[in-house]
Length: 122
Image (cartoon, rainbow, N blue to C red; front, side):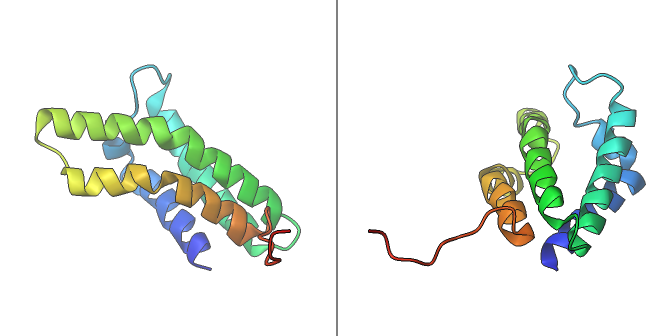
């Protein structure tokens, strides 16, 4: 349930504060405004799919891939903020970047896309 809220909130944020998000998109990304809108819609679709039994696993894989794909934008955002000294501080960016693998794992685990065995190793 928390993962659904996480991605739903992120998706809404992409649609509400689009211009702020466009400013952190790396320069090599074509049509950044459209990409921010599209990624917000993808997050909302992923959150909605997590609610369903039929699409839950696919949503987990898609959201994990999504989290991996936006990692460069998060790194770019940190570089912009930290090099200019005018944005968010290191205590915001460091945990965000460090936790990206956990967010990827969370999407896979919470959706049932991967299963954790509780058996003792042989």
